[in-house]
Length: 179
Image (cartoon, rainbow, N blue to C red; front, side, top):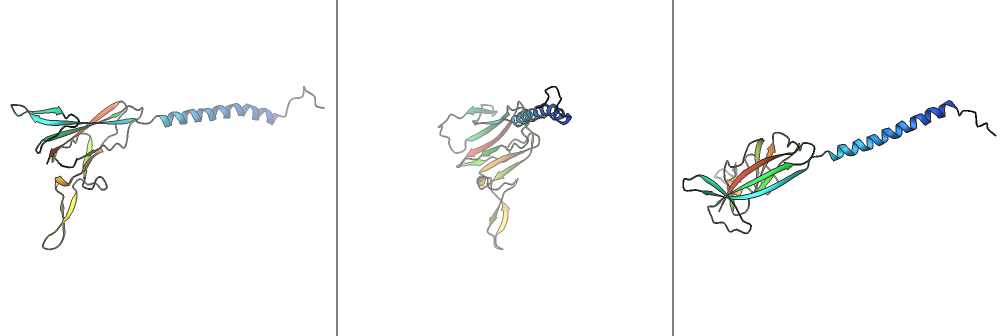
């Protein structure tokens, strides 16, 4: 029978003292890991379409396009994409995209360029992208590559220059003309 007044061996005391510290460390790692995982950007995109009209003096005026509206050939529509980051960290790889609807043609130079390194276009629904899409065209010497007509553009996207900071928004715009 053992004597209850005898102390346990010294190595048991050290192990018991380290156990709570290891437990606390494990809990801290779990909590901090969860916090770091939750510290992500939370980006929402809002799209608005406005009909571009002119007043009596020729100044441009924007009028929201009601859903279900029938537009006529020659009408210009400005699309506005607002990207908002409501998250606690920056959105570092934000690449907003806009569609160029069928029966419309992109208006050259209308894509906003503020805070974008470049604007790229697609002629195949977003499968490939280029600052200047090219197509093959027949010629007397055989097929040659030439710049695609803007009427072939199907999408555009903005390649960002800087991250979208927490609790901020950026606006991207472009115009199309109804064919």
